[in-house]
Image 1 (tube, rainbow, N blue to C red):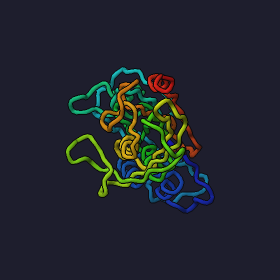
Image 2 (image 1 turned 135 degrees about the vertical axis):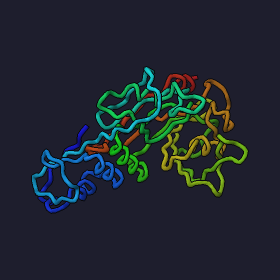
Image 3 (image 1 turned 60 degrees about the vertical axis):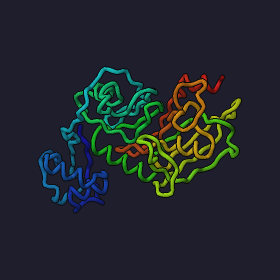
Image 4 (image 1 turned 90 degrees about the horizontal axis):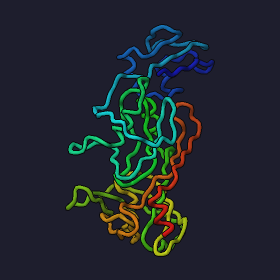
Length: 291
């Protein structure tokens, strides 16, 4: 997989390395890898990255670094929401881990995606965010290190954003609002998180979509991405997710937390075009809403 760029008049006199940083967004780490692998060609010939270029010169960058993830590829069906040569977005079902665990090395999203990748894609699993096992919805995966770096920058700046649908217990009094409360680990649990003064800052925005019989369908957007953030925040304000036994949700009508990542938005890591992808609400949450 290659990325090409033609030097403009404004770039003339700059080095290949500076142009790659300034106009193509390459990180210093990635450029160091490219130096070791001789992965940059100018006008069809190998070139030193400190060479100053002229208008019209053609830079070609090999984006394949021969890296790999030590995970067994498995022919597990996945629902693809978007795919091109740089980026893959999948709609993860509930009851599936994103990453393998030592005691559970198979049947994860990583196993499925590595099997899906063809010979033109490095066998590396680069998710930009994670979902809990029983949270369904969209997961963004970079197909090469440069796309991963660009998307990680967007995740930090908020340009890559995620929206969720959740069914929470009771009625949210305010139709929209924000929760800005730090989250840290519970001292007596390896899994559970809690709001605590010495935790990491966490911000969640919410908006009521529909009041149900004894619960609320809410749309939420994450500003930060702490573990269990939505589950912890909603439980803390007295509205735990339906089906979320870990955080006090009632166990009726659904056998997992009623949480689904329904939309992601970003700038495409290579073209810069705006990209917004939606995933329909899953059937078990639809039944819960209609019950």
